Length: 304
View 1 (cartoon, rainbow, N blue to C red):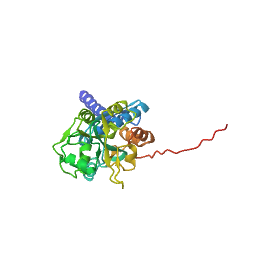
View 2 (tube, one colour):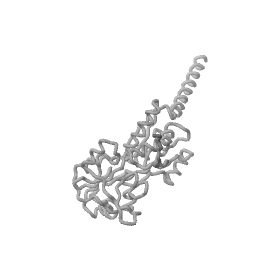
View 3 (cartoon, one colour):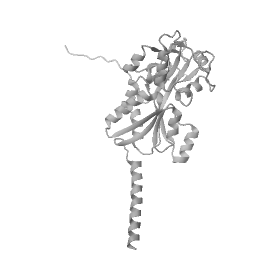
View 4 (tube, one colour):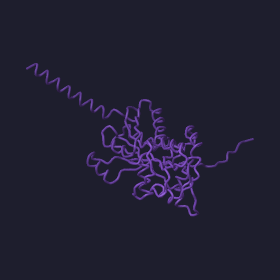
């Protein structure tokens, strides 16, 4: 009987320890301590790496492990328990909100923290670097036989945006080829005189990045028709043209988090929307969505 009692007591202790361990795994991370896995749309990689670097340097006891992948893979990861935050180019749609409400009993929080653009890039030797929207549509549909390079034919936010906005759901032409990722798009255009590439602005628009500046010796950002301008103007992707809606291929940058407490995922998302996070987007030449930074001229009087 004593042996049975001892065995039962040991079993209860083991169960309690396992439950405690599970609970600890759930509640361990906070805004300044712990580790979290996140999934990020690969087209935002350069700027999100900067966000993570600054956050981890501010809170040295945190570790944010980011996996960079196509947009649809990020949403697939979001359905697993190991991923509580994703960074993508759209929020949740109605079906997704209903799904998470039924499975989690609450709707994950999502908000846009910046605005990005899909840059159209061409080789420096290319004769054509000015495009109307109709011209781009003809290239992507295959009516014009020019090699168009994207970061994958399926599942990326770039592909989804261009197919929805320019082609209105139509299929890409046979001239559209898939690169491995955004960096590969840039490399292909660098070495191919007649190719046109589509890539997130943070890969080619950072004036402080030495590698990107070196690449601009072999590629250039094309001018695209401003659809709201009255005088037939064209614009390159930049912080200013995104802010004033002059560049037509602009898109939001969202984070989506499924935490109903203030843990590391929510805290990192809040950081991107805070003044420091918004300044990082601004320094990367994206357009901050939460805070408007304005330059004001002032006169400072000095006594002689």
